[in-house]
Image 1: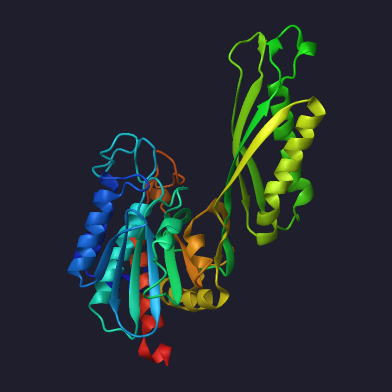
Image 2: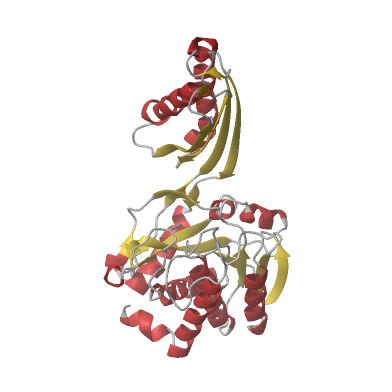
Length: 393
């Protein structure tokens, strides 16, 4: 940490930050089941003097403090993943088959510390702390929006931070435009005609058709998408057949599509269906395609990103601010940024010397907690700058 970061927080504050993170890590909860986490978050916000609303988007928590016309929204996600933790630490998950494998425990802790500090300072506007459930593909952001999280007061801007184990502690990604990809999920059921493995001419082999679909679908990225525009079509599962000498009558495929620009996002369902339809027609099979939107690309507002970049540069130094990083992973912070100008940051959390290098969603995921005061400081300084009377005038 730089001298600026170490002098901003007392030892007691940093210890509380780490204690919060480890407590949330020991007690992970899946999407829309964040009952304990929400209760603890609400307790801290209420003690700090926030007007707290619980049950927003089922298990979300919102705290509002301050007055004035300008409102800044700070968002942190709370849910864990259905993964069995394999780390051996004194704060490892106490719940079988559930762990914080993506850093959301750290997100909550950083936002809580920033909320405490900001509650003790005068501001020229309002702070809206949003603790979101069910980020991991379950639509928590949409649920909160449907419950009015972007109203009364309506935020003028929004900010969020995601820990990022691809980058070392001390580096921060502040990028204008697309940062993270859209996430779509699809399921294809191919219906052929089963039969004896030794008499294929009497059948329509669903496995053969499925294999052709998998191969042909790769041409969507290689031949339909601009080579300068990232896109991904991934098949994550193919299930068909049970016996070595029986040709399968049905095959099920599931997968995901990722894009960074709006035109490709809109075009992908038709592109995939055209491939599936053509292949099935050629082989005499039928199909059902269920294509589901999870979230759009996470796109940062250029003007607000510039504002945030200046603050982050002051916190970590210009050499540690990155603008060249994008990822095809997705985030439903995109739902908020599609409606409110804002900025989503990636906060380096990797420490190779300590072996903290496992990727997100891994059963051995863990991060260097030295990143947490940096994130809390960024949130605090952005809020100070955005809500200050001088800035508002």
